[in-house]
Image 1 (tube, rainbow, N blue to C red):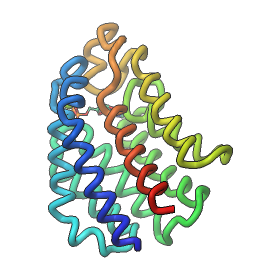
Image 2: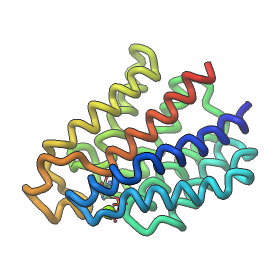
Image 3: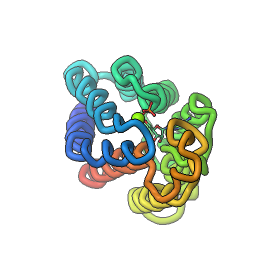
Image 4: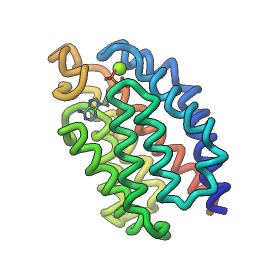
Length: 203
Ligand code: ADP
Ligand code: MG
């Protein structure tokens, strides 16, 4: 069951990055250097190439291996950031999370690692503007977990539109970063949707 879930998650995430490669490229062309689509695609292609090795592992080891793969294959800032997210989640997932609270505890370790690695937090127009609200929605314990996570991801993504970027390449643009969605927030929202869809389908 778990192996099949991981296999499906890898396939779905890779497919999604492929399908949205152009969109992520265009978002990054507007406020960065235009490589976010390629970076995400390269990273997930590499994870997919190792799917046979990753899927049978314990969840913790699988997340760590997937995270390490992103760190070693993605050149941009997003590789080490997503790599830290997955590796720290993997270290925290010593036993498999079985409910919302235990999943939130694991996810929280990952989000903290992104904050540390990026020296950043919500409000800087980054992936954290999706990841942090999703974590908060899971920790709040109200509503259906999958539904509140999706909504938090969508609202968090939209919140980046009118933010001034203060971290990453987009910060070099100053005021000109305002009016565009953040590419990393978009890829995070896409990945949150992938996980939510798979959890829903497996219930
Ligand atoms: P690069 O910026 O090196 O070209 P990417 O284009 O792949 O790398 O990734 C850019 C995304 O990474 C941004 O849209 C943002 O969401 C995220 N990002 C960049 N710097 C930081 C940071 N310091 N903290 C959190 N996220 C960041
Ligand atoms: Mg870029």
